[in-house]
Length: 198
Image 1: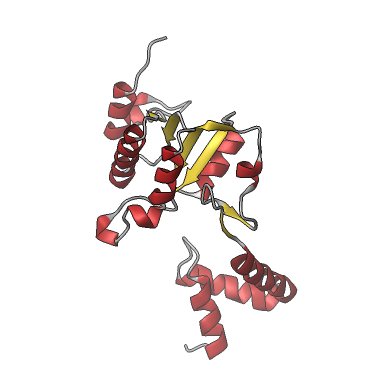
Image 2: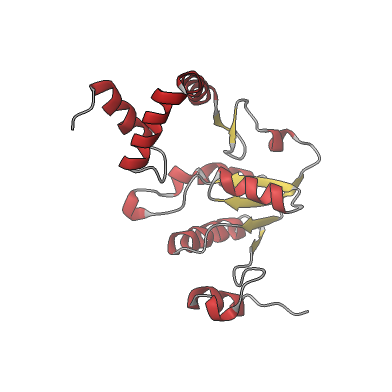
């Protein structure tokens, strides 16, 4: 069955969201048209405003409406510590669940030559400039435990050491409350290699 062109375009547009396939996009479109026209109008205006006003922070690349994000504007943060993460969601997770008081650098991805993602796409020239300034004494690598995440961490570690900054990596391993028999081999291996004395 063919939908109207406008409805087809709406369904196709909703599919740009992560995890939204054809059926989910169709359900969303029908819901907006049947029950939430006012909400849909508000959603569209909010998305349009966000896309036109939100940009990258000039220091850490986090999303902001200003030249510098709130974290970079906070003078109580420790300039000597920079935590490198893959995405803004990682910053939110660290902020909500830890007492980290340093700065961040958001890559907006990870090195992946196959996909055409190199150092320049991750803003590593900006990070190199910050490290060359000499204020950063430790770079904390908080990239994912994927092959690309590990390659990215190694590249940044080399960059940090070349600029006389120390390097540490967040621990990976068995989750709190996890049972060893259910942990995959890679995670268990990392847990053992990253063990520390008590």
